[in-house]
Every structure is written in C-alpha cells, then in structure tokens.
Length: 118
View 1 (cartoon, rainbow, N blue to C red):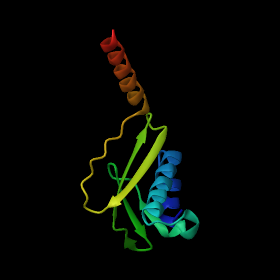
View 2: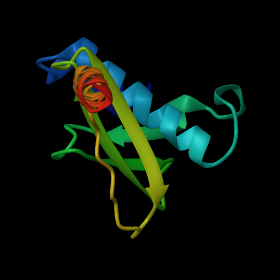
View 3: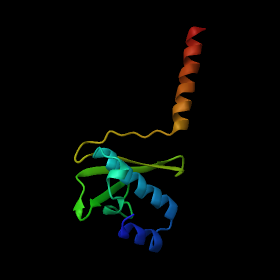
View 4: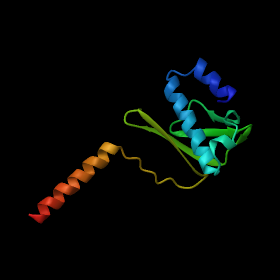
C-alpha cells in the first residue's frame, strides 16, 4: 500500500477491510491492464485515491495520473468487490449481474423450454 492509502485506512476508513479489498482490486486491474504481473510492479507506488467517488477510482503511479478509467463495485451485498480498467474515454456498456439473477434467468428459460416441448 502507498503511504496515502495506509493513512486513509488507519485514520478515516469506516470499513477498513472492504476499503482494503477495493484498493487491492483496483491495483490488480491496473497491472492486468498494462500487461505485467504483480511481482513486476512496486505496488506501493500505485496510489488509489480514497474515498472512491461513486463507483470510479482515481489512480496515480508516483505523482502521475494513470491514463485508464477504473470502475469499481461489489456483488452479493458487498461480499465481493471488483475493479475493471478500460481505456480512458471509452463508453462503458458494462452490466454487472448477480450470480443468483443468472441462475434464476437460466431456470426460467429451462421451464419455458419444457413447457414448449409438451
């Protein structure tokens, strides 16, 4: 973690573990977007600006802003967090669907298929 992230987590965060996961997933998204492994980057030099405004994250490497847009969120009522990096300025058509919704949708489709066969 960067010094700023450590200070935020210890002094201001009301959800330290969740905020730590948010920071970590943004850093993971960044290293994946630039095509290197986590071991190839000094993660303390990547700073995720907190608190995360809405569902976007501001990221700097050293003092330079990263030229990517990051979207963050959670699934299963905050049980899981995610971060997605994409080229700056690209329109986001991202629709995150809870796994239970996918299962319900599939079950409805199977029931409809069964009724059509009868």
